[in-house]
Amino acid sequence: MIKVKTEEKVDSVLNLASKLSLNTALSEIDPSRANGFKVVYNRECPFEIRSQEGHVQSIGDVDLFRCKLLVKENETSLEAFRFELSSDQDLFFYLDHHVKLEDFEEIAKEQRLTLQYQKYPTMLIQMLDGCISEPQTNLAVLTIPKSGSARLDFIKNMEFKFVEVFSCNFLEQGFETVRGRIAFRYEALKYQLKLSEQRVLELEREQRINQIT
Image (cartoon, rainbow, N blue to C red; front, side, top):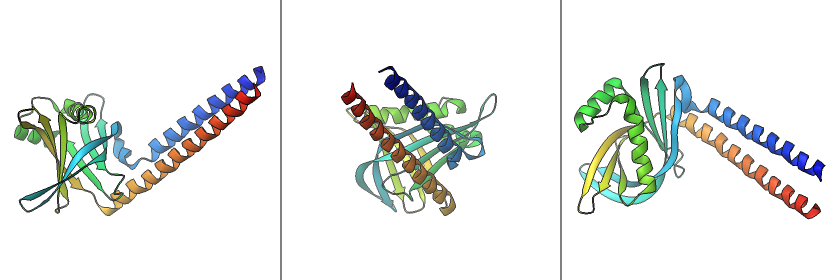
């Protein structure tokens, strides 16, 4: 009995170490982290999709998009910020919202923001979390024209009217960039499959142990 419990603890530690090492490996090969960027947010968020041709908009369905926010910092301040959009439904869909201090100053002026550049990632994280936790009140509308760019509008449902809170523009990325992201996502899926297989083996082992005891 003591031997079985000891083996369980050893296996648990080894499995944890394996997961940690795989996590570290995936983090190291993530192309989004190139040039000193680090991931501060990575969640799926529901967006209403609208296509646009000229001045005509067509309303589509609500779909989930992967929202990855990254920052590049020095010892005292934020140097650059990126907001990546991707979709599991379309591996070639990849949009990027890249903002440096001078870009943010223009955005803040146009949209009358009162916060500092340092707080810009936090603002977007709060908006995305709101769309996830309260989708009836906090809406996100992704408008995709045929020009290779897109616009994401955050809208507040005030019951008596809809109020546009903030908008940000995205650019479609080149083929080489997209290919690198697809390769990374493929490796991530292999990692998730491996963890699932490990979990199944662990459950089978636990069942055998329970039958013995």
